[in-house]
Every structure is written in structure tokens, then in C-alpha cells.
Image (cartoon, rainbow, N blue to C red; front, side):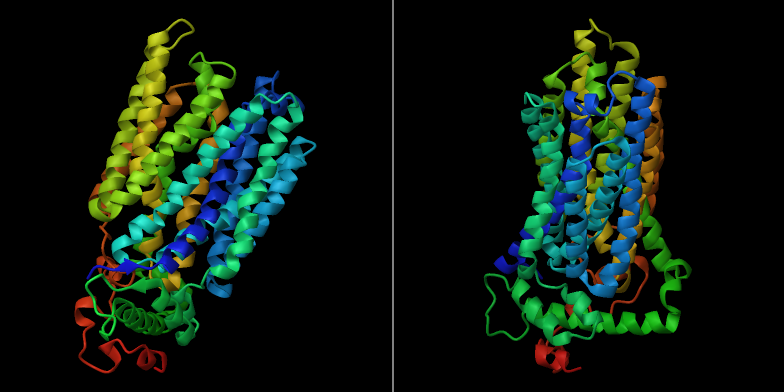
Length: 500
């Protein structure tokens, strides 16, 4: 059956993308700030390279550490207080971080502010794809949840072009304080729009609030253009019946199986946990965050100077935005695992060529080598954004059953933040000492990760969140093909389900 989403569904997704913008901006603002002369001068990072590398590595490391804490906090809050409350809390953290970053007077204050910023970003990057997956129909889930990745990178691009503008400001303080202050805008708008976002219907079902859940589901989804509205067996009614029966089955299994311990003792759950973590780790093991966070320095090493380094960086993420959008559009047709593996292979080849070029050709007078260096960097981001970025969020948000989706997604995103803590903390020193050799590490890691993903990972496209259980060996309470008019309760009568 083809599911069609309503304008109510689209409006909900668009509001959720404000959280994606919040994460993307917080994650990228420091990248461009490192190219602002006013920032480097204020924090004494321009003259002493050893001190500069240590401070920059610490700032990035604390952001990732905060992100790890925020991800786990979101995983707990999502189930305890609901998706909406978790999103509001993440927005408050992000606003507070923007205020502190813009007002930073020394390096310790900046480091603490980045930790808080990471906390808010970590919560946001967990809750938004969970929320999106739970309000999207299966045939369009890749497109709708994929908007999370699209708008993250759109925020990266916007940050870059804002930095291009502030670079030419005559006020050295404005160059970096204004971009930090803008971090408050998207989470503030998200807070204002929060009343227009429905609570997740699956979370409501887990709380026994069936009537509220049905009211939301009936507004989120509509039948196809050829379906009769008088037909009892509408898509929304069938989905609600399946959701409710699956929650009943999972709740009973959860209680009798020992509760939360099952996430590490039940084989199918443990498999999903390591797969979610692995997808996010593999994305970072391509070297994407190292390339992105130290891109300004990389372009300087290629012989570019001044504002052109920030312009190239902003163009890089603009290309990434387009590639993410393409991935979101084709994901429901091509499949998640195929896109991920194509992305990993492309990143590995592109970074191999970049490393070889830097080893052989780069130099102050090597215009050909420097041009090839830029070309391979742009090839890298096309494969990463077009194959891995948006796809990884979609895959991790849908492989978990409803009752462990929040902690599962949190554990998955810990793969991102724990990886970047290591990769970014040592990045400045490693790039200074071994240069292109650091990229070879990511090439080798990606080769291994590609083989693992090809062998172990199941495809999930086109299935409802409940039916994905079958790909991991768990029971599915009701399949859509079984969810027909054969009983009062399965007839699509929501009142019968609500009263169960």
C-alpha cells in the first residue's frame, strides 16, 4: 500500500527541521570562526601554533563530549517526558550556549560554552530524527526524515556564508561574536512553534493515551488519490491498529523479558544497538568531521589565503546541501544500505586520491596539485552527503522498536560524538605532524567498515517501523497485508482500538 502524507504531516516535519538547523549551526559555527582574524587575535591563537592546536582541539573535544552527554540525556527524557518536552529542553540549552559563546571573555568560558552547546546539539540530533520517523509514512520516511540531514547541512552552508560576510567587517569583535549570537535564532523560533507540533503518536500509545494518539494519526496521514474517504480501511486506521497491537506485544515482552537489561541481553536488540552505533561511527571514520572542522587550515596548506579559504568552505557545504537533498529524494527508491555503502566507497576513494595528491604534488607553486586537492575534497563531500549523511540518521531512527527507539538512537549518536572526541581532539596535532598520513588512517578504517556493512546490515526501505522488527528476528503483531476487514477491531474502526 502506498502511504500519502498530509499537509499537517509536512508542517510538522518543517517545524522539526528548525531543530536540524540548530544542530547544524552549532556544529559548524566554530569551523568558520577559526578563519576570523578577530577571533584568533582575541584568544591569542594566531602566533603560538602549539598552544593554538591544543586550545582548538580542546574546544572541539568539549563540544563532542557535551554532545555525548546530551544524546544520552535525550534518550532518557524522550521516554520519560515525551518527545516534545525533550525538544523544548534541547532548544533551551542551545539558546543558553549561544548567549555564552557570544559573550565569551576568555578561553575557559569559551570551552564551557561549547560543552553546553554540544549538550543541546546532542539532544537535538537524537530527538529530531526520532520524532520525524514516528510521524512519517513508510513509503516516504526516507524523504521526510532525510530532511534532518538536508537542513543540518543547509545550516552549515548558511554559517559559512555568514562567516564570509563578517570576515570583511571592520570590527574584529563583530567578526566572531555575531555568528555565535545567531546560534540562538533557530532554537528560539522552535520554542515559539512548539505548540503546533503534535506529540509522537507512538509515545502516546506507550503511555496508554490511545484516543490522543488516534487523533494525531488521523491528521498525519491520508489515503491515496483513488481511495474513497468512506472506505473503512483507510491507511491511517490500518496504521493505528498495527501500532497499537505492536505496542501491546512489545510491552508484554518488555515486562516479561526483564526490562531495560534486554538491550544488552536480547540478541535482536543488542544487534540493533551495535548497528546504530556502528553506522554513526562509520560516518565519522570516513574523516568527514576532520576534513570539515579543519577545512580552513587545509585550504591554507593548499596555498589559499584570506577570505578565499572561507568562501571555498562555504561552497563546500553548499554542495553538501544539494547532495543531501538528492539523497533524501532517492532514498526510498534506492534503499538505505545501498546508499550508505556507495557513500563509504566513494569517500574512501576520494580521500585516497587526496592523500596521494598531497604526498606528491602539493606545494606553494604547484597550481595543478592544489587544484586537484580542492577537486578531491569536493568529490569527498559529494559521496559523503549524497550517500551517508542524511541516510545514517534515517537508518538509525527506524531500526529500533518504539520502546527502545529513544535510548537506541541516543546510543547510536554516541557513536558520532565519541568518535569525533578522538578524531577532532588529536586532529590539529596529527595534521601538523603527519599531514596527509592522518587521512590514510580514515581510508583504512572505511575499507573495514564498508565490508562490515555490506555483509551484516539489512535493508529497511518501504517497511513500517513495526514491520522492520522482522528484519531482526522479532515478532510483528500485525502485517499490513493481514490488517484487512476481517474483524471489528481490524476493520479500521479507531474507536474499537482506542477502547481496547
